[in-house]
Image (cartoon, rainbow, N blue to C red; front, side, top):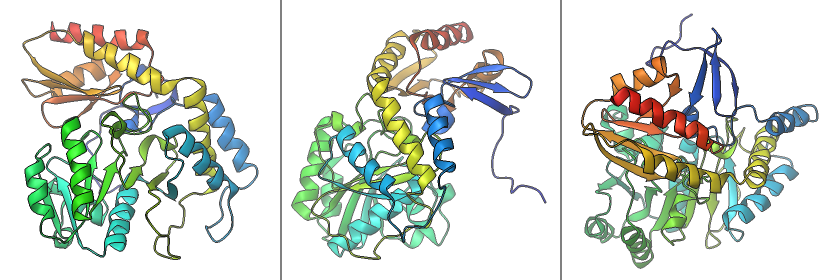
Length: 374
């Protein structure tokens, strides 16, 4: 049997990782500025993280959500304090896509409406409902297209209000910073207007913080830079540093009904041990503050070059937009300089480094980029 061939793979086979470093099967060391697509938050193989999961596995690794799991309650309490949403409730699942599915479903349950507003260049996942609210026709099957979704331009409040006037909108979902779409940042004015419009027309404001949350931008959630408070916040990726985990934070106005949401693996013992360890490490090592400091240093020191159009983003969620296709630049970084990076479209190098990235490691990337740009 062969694998279903849907991934374009680089000829690199990682076998070991520590902090922001990865080693391949030949012993070559790489600097990881992509974190496995923003998943590695506190660094690869952090000793406290490894110990927490190992210790939990020696006790109990899994049971279903038909029994009480005190680790879920502990996570809810610690997460509420860490992000400032202590009055919200937490529903746990397995991934960012599942979190977004549950968020739009909950918004529809809550309002009794059936339409969602999403944004051009958005990405919310690859499950059925998440694909329907993602602006990427190449991944939308005919089945996905049956959902009622209206796409608006980012930072265009007039378009959003026109769509809301129909009266059938359950929720508006927006990323704290658009990741796959090109590190596109909403303006503060737009986000505050969006919050007001949702309240005016009775729609739920859903903040997709799957990629932009968990300290990546220098605040716990990216939307906290805009001074707003959404009805639902979705999480994934960095929440458990590589162990599959996701969740949604739900405002107090929502009423839980038995059976309205559910999951087999969500909130399992190992995921909770991982997620609790992540919060502990983030606090002890000041990783949210570090993400902002190191990210701003990178932004300020990207070399001036006619080949670079713009640098966008916040903290350690950065995009370097070029005036040319970046595939050769990314390959040079990987195979010549041994640095992992990502892309967002044909013209952007995307950086999603672990939050523990050091100034010295940031300088290694800056120097490598200078050499590649000549």
